[in-house]
Image: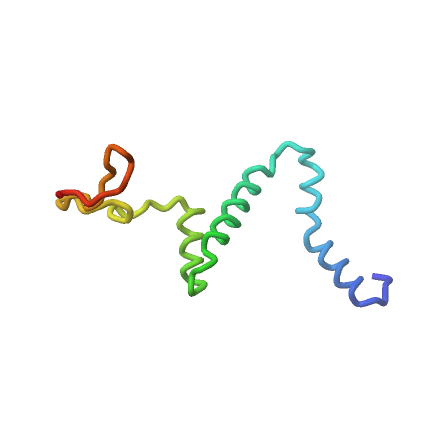
Length: 101
């Protein structure tokens, strides 16, 4: 290495270390699309935006694993118990009312 500038030396070492990976990009010549990666990145950003009010990073991390890993939702997460009637129904005019009255 001819340069005496330390940041330039570090950059050159990095390029040498990743040389094959960098050359693979040029060898592929648009045979692969980055659409899948862009889609995952978008899902992660939307999840992070939705998780803004979470109190801990662990909760955000679990939300990311859940969305990006396509994990199944527990069966009772968004459903009423099967043996109990739904306490709120929509009347004919579209207003919410308590059922059983």
